[in-house]
Image (cartoon, rainbow, N blue to C red; front, side, top):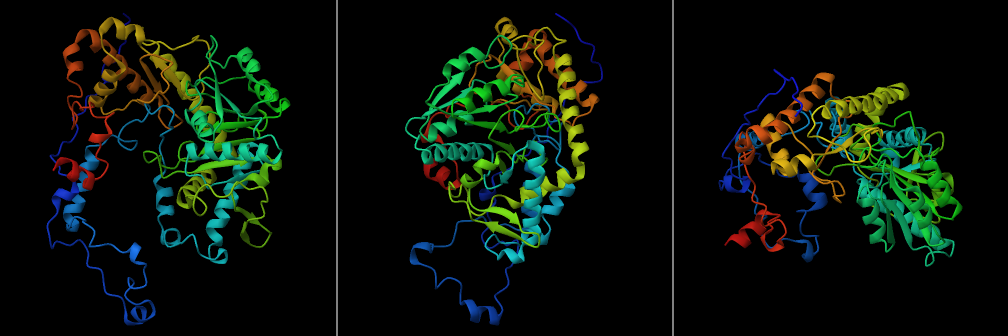
Amino acid sequence: MKRIRREGMVQEVQQASWNEPIIFELDQPGERGILVPKAEAAIAEAVGDGVSKLSPKMKRDGLPKLPEINQKRVLMHYLRLSQETLGGDINPEIGQGTCTVKYNPKINDRIANTEKMTDLHPLQDPSTVQGILEVLYKSDVMMREISGMDYFTFQAGGGSQATMTMASIVRMYHRLRGEEEQRDEIITTAFSHPSDAAAPALKGYKIITIMADEYGRPDYEAFKAAISERTAAFVVANPEDSGIYNPRVKEFTDLVTKAGGLNCYDQANANGLFGIARAKEAGFHMCYFNMHKSFGTPHGCGGPGSGAVGVVAELKDYMPRPLIAFDGEKYFFDYDLPKSIGKVKMFNGNAQAMLKAYAWMMSFGAEGLYEVGKVAALNNVYLYKKMLEHDAIKVPFKEETQRIEQTRYTFEDYAEETGFSYDDLSRRVMDFGMHIWSSHHPYYVPEPFTLEPTETPSKADLDKYAATIHHIMDEFKENPEIIKSAPNNSTIHRVDESSMDDPEKWCPTWRVYLRKTK
C-alpha cells in the first residue's frame, strides 16, 4: 500500500457535546421572551380585534402549543445546537459533492436582511417595489449573458421545481403543436440528477435512460437509437453527477432538435463552466441554474433557494407568468404570455435569495465569474490527483477522462478487502471535523464518495482534506476498532437507522412524536 506523508495535516476534532433537550421540553409556563404591545387605539378601531372577521374554519380551537421560554434560554439553546453541527462556516466543505456548498459572503446575508428587504410584501403595488424588481430584472439580464438564453424566470424554488418547470414547458409546447400524445418519451442519462427523470415522469412521460460508455460519457450510439418521433425532450446535466463533461453534447442536442424535440439543460452546478461554456452554444432550448449552489447563496439544507429557468426567444410565451420587464422608465410584471404554463410557485420566487445572488454576481463581474470557473476546475483537478495518490481510492471509468468541478470516487476493492463500507468512512470523517456526501442515487458506482471543492478552498485546505481521507483509509487496516465505533468525538455516535423505512415510526413534528410515544 502506498504511504502518504502527512504529518501535521491530520487534525482530530472533539466536538462540543450538550445534553440539550428539544425546545418543547424547555417549556416553562408563564415565561416570556418578549411582550407584544397592544394595538394602538387608531389601529384597533380600523381593524378590530384581528380575529372576528376570520372565517370560523380559519380559527384555532385553542392557543397554539408553543414553548414558553425567555430570551436568554432561547439563545443558549440554539447556540449549543450550533456547536454540535458541522457546516460550511466551521470546516472545509469539500465533501458536499453535487451540491456546491461553498463560502457564501456574509455581507450578502446582511444586505438581504435589511428592513428595505424584509419589510416588502409580494402583494405590494409594483410602483412601490421598484428596487427589488430592478434587482430581479438585472439578474435576468446577467443570467442571459452567462447562459446565452433570452429570458429568465426566478419563480421556481430550486432545481427540482425548475426541472418540473422545464418539463411543463415541454408538455405545453407539444400540446399546442398537436403532438402531445405522440411525443411521450423523455431521454436522460444515468448520471444526470435524479430529478431530471423524476420531474418528467411526474408529468406522465416515459423515461429513457442512457448509460455511460467506457469514458463515463453518455453512450452516443445508444442515444441515437433512442431518438424517434416519440421523443419530447432531452433533459441532461453536463457535467453529470460524476463530474464528467460530455464534449460531444452538441451532437446529442442536434439529433433531438432534428427529431422535433426540445433540449433541456440541468445546470444546477455551473461552477466549473462560468465564462467557458454556455447552454446556447451547446444547442439547448432551455436551462436552469440553482442560485443556491453556484451563485453564492446558502444552500440551507434544501432551501431557501431559487431555480432560475432560462429559455430561448421562441419559448418565451410558454414561461410561468409573470416575467419582470422594463419599459425604459419603470419595472413591471409582464403577464402577456399567451401560451404560459401558469405559475409554478406563489408570487415570484425567493426574492431574498436572488438579492444575494445578484450581489454575488455584481461583486465578481464577468472576469471574476470566469476566474471562478477556472479555479473551481483547477481545485478539482488538484484534489483528483491528490486523492489518487492512495491506492485504496479509484475512480470509475478511465482515469484520463477529465472531471470538471467534482469527482465521484470509489473504494470498492478496498471495501471488499477490509470489510468496511462507505458509511464507515462517512462516520469516521466526522471525528476530524469534516463531512462527506452520502447521496449518490442511483448507485451505479459501488462504495462511492463524491468530492466537490468549488473555488472556495485553498491548496492547504485541499491538502488537509486529502490527507485526512488517506489517514482514514489506512485506519481501515491498521486500527479497525476505531472505525467500528466511529464517530468517536461527535455528539451522536451511531444512529439507529432501523426505522428509516417504516413510516409508522417517523416523527416529523413534536406533536406526532407525543402521539406515537404515549
